[in-house]
Image 1 (cartoon, rainbow, N blue to C red):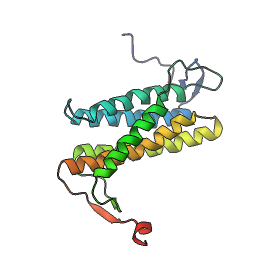
Image 2: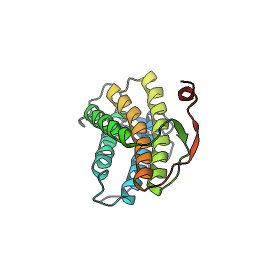
Image 3: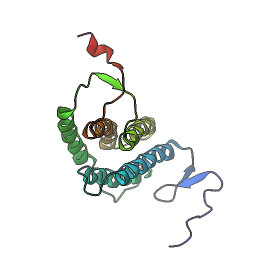
Length: 188
């Protein structure tokens, strides 16, 4: 492996696919930075789970797809990206998993305070960072269209991490810290 540093970013720019240079605070770079944080947090969660845990495979698939998504976000308009997006199929897989998780979770009519187990706390942090990534992607989308399958995938990802965090608390036999009931559900 060659040197990790290139010195090409010392003046506040970074490269996109195809060699175009943009400021390091460009919205495309900001969105990718958020996605990179999410990927790192998923790695933290996976490191806290046994290798045989049933969630390992889907979390690994999410990490791999996040890398593809980041490559597409780093591709300027007019250039082709050779990495095939599988966001639509993974989004459907996440939706099916969420339907299954929702059916097994206790009372869901309240806000929860993030925390609990290390896995649940890191999943809640990943959820929050995913939401930031989604906001950055929508800002980018207003300037330059982002593949809508990416936007759907990222939207589902925050919900998925929220439910996994809740499921981890339940499978550990721990109670969540409730903040308050959802006002709109209490009015029914």
